[in-house]
Image (tube, rainbow, N blue to C red; front, top):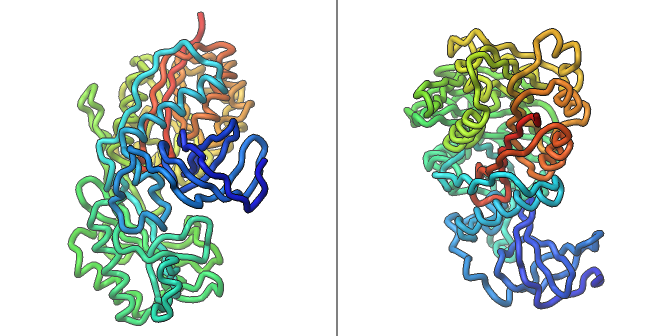
Amino acid sequence: MPKKGSIVEGIDIVDLGTKGKVIGKKDGQVYLCKGAVPGDTINLQVRKNRKGHVEGIVDAITSYSSDRVDPTCSHFEHCGGCSWQNFDYEKQLFFKEKQVKQQLNRIGGFESYESFPILSSEEVYEYRNKLEFTFTQEGWLTPDKVSDPSIRKTPSLGFHVPGRFDWVLQIDECHLQDSLNNEFRNFVHKTALELDISFYRQREKTGILRNLVLRNNRKNEWMVLLVVSEQTDLVHELCEKISTEFSQVTSLWLILNQKLNDSYADCPVVKVKGDDHLIETFKNSATEAEVKYKIGPKSFFQTNAYQAERLYQLVFDWAEIEKSDLVYDLYTGTGTIALFMARYAKHVIGIEYVPESIEDAKVNSELNEQSNLSFYAGDMREVLSRDFIDENGRPDVLITDPPRAGMHTDVIERILEAEPKRIVYVSCDPSTQARDLKLLHEKYDLIKAQAVDMFPHTSHVENVAMMRLRK
């Protein structure tokens, strides 16, 4: 393998990898790096030798891919939020679909199943319904500004530089959420400076303004969360100015975070003005029935509502639910998929690790006047026991949407014992999904699979698989 620090020339970039990396090859050696796209030829500076591959950074691009496009955002080179904004979207889809098929084949061993073309996102920009920005007293300077002695670090509001907790890049434009997010963020930044409210210092753990969280629904109603280390008169004045300036803000909150980390899930919240929630509505196209979801300041909700609605529709269609069916929804979160299914089943049981999410699920059940749902909080391995299945009944249909790590083998064993007629498995990591499907293959056949692009211009891809109990 090449030595650390050496330059390897003439590496052809041939594929997309995970976590924003690309895969290059030369003379049978595999290389991983960021900053290039398939079709490029690069020179690479070696940083690490790993088992089976070499990692490094791009030293030079000697030949540019014909699939390169001009990035939309001025911050693309430094932000890291949109890894593939400089890569043709149709090609992104091609490589994501290819990745899913490879995982199902190489890890799962599946060859004979119906494969549908990847479900592309109708919105490739402004598709997110939530963004979180960070205040910092001294914003990170891009390499072209560091060398200019006349440019000084200033209080900034933006995104963390990838891999650094203390570097925050000032963001003037972001195309991930409705363009109004730019007006909100820039107004808050400007007004906070005018009011002379201190921005947070990540290393010293001092300062008042910590985070700005923006949530919106498809009706263009907005929830603004201002995360602060203490409540002051100036903070409340800032809130009042936000409310006066933007009529779209229907819910305004302060979150008091006096901890050393940025997580605010366990921090007290204070409603400043407006409603205590947003409402997002999905429609089941098979029946025209609507499902409403109540979103509070700490609620989890799929960040791409447009694509989530289409994902749930796919799950519903493949679940083939009948009125007599008992449905289990594992890793139910706030019950979003369970609610989408409920009125077509006899009963739906949702299980989730986070108790707060289960409380949201129960609220949403009441909002939709659905009484045929039961929700349980706890570790999946402990809740989904033989006694639980005996008490609640064996499921006819099982839906599972686990975290990236997939399902524990104990959970898979319970599923195999319960023998639901159909399983619909939603995954944000096709590799762990393929591993789990292989274990389920003991009793189930993989019938069909379809990749879903929830996050355009990133390396993330979801996959939906349907399995049927072997007779």
